[in-house]
Amino acid sequence: MVAMAATTLLTSDQFLAMPEELDQNGNALFRELINGEVVSMPHAAKRHDIIRGNILEALFAHLLQNRGSGLKALPDTQFIVNANDTFVPDLCVISVDRMKAGESNYIHGAPELAIEVVSPSESAAYLRIKTEAYLANGSNSVWIVFPEVRSVMVYTRDSVREFKNDQPITGPLLPGFSTPVAAFFELT
Amino acid sequence: MAATTLLTSDQFLAMPEEFDQHGNRIKDELIGGEVVKMPPASLVHDLIKNRIHELLIEYLHANPELGLKSLVEIGTQVSNADAFIPDVSVVKRSRLPGAARVFQGSPDLAIEVVSPSDTAKHLERKVDAYLQGGAKSVWVVFPEARSVRVHALDSVQKFKADQSIEDPLLPGFSNPVASFFELT
Image (cartoon, rainbow over all chains, first blue to last red; front, side, top):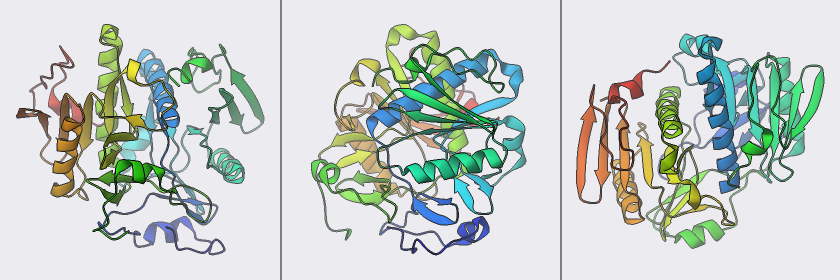
């Protein structure tokens, strides 16, 4: 349980300098910093896990066919997005060069593409804050995936668009990406 | 939770989830009845996990007749006293649909990439529980030693360097172990 009061706002530097919060077995807790607030991460349910897996597979398939893109798809990677936001997107696409740069446990800035699969316990306010922070700090686009309605909202700096059913998500980062949105929800 | 309070998986999964002040659930596992919070992994740990997952996806795309799917960090209810989140799970696709909130039983293949915070006691328990719970094999990946120990019910085998893991579940999977640790 995060003991931090909701009103205590931290910078990313303070957050990362904090001693880890440990349970009785000496394991540290999973946390993010959202707009200065420390937020513990929920563990996901099967549907969330499968959807994340399906999208990752589709991204791998696309990037394998586009080896020259210099991009890589990763789950659960920690980003210091700005001074007040440290996020772990469910999935991200980033340039390989940025991974080589750091030996540390996190990457500075926002991923080229951040993907969040919404779970029932997730707050709408935090989702919006996260989306804005990703875009303001260099993300080309943010996909917010809604399992219940089987749709994906794709945010860019100046647009938002919903994709569903047999539509593949189009955008400049992944030209030719052809997996229909419905395939993201296969086996769920 | 005191370390001496042992729970069953049903109790663990039925427990009111532990929430922080923002209503987010906290990530944890049940290991031999003990509630264990998941540590955030290091980037190197994640890169190795992702690399193995990527190699498995490539392999499974080339071998669709196996009917298997590779997934990262899915919640599993392995036994009465064990609810784990393996780094990588390879499961029969037919086992995935269904109403259960958490995947039931062991994955057909469970892969754990060892972090410095893993205790030997918990690792051993997990390997045993996966195998008892129906896993055909468990791969335990050691980043420092760049080796993989493959546990089956009646054997354990170590692979490293240019050796490929021989796992009957994945016939012809021919990536040398060293390739798990080539990170970009």
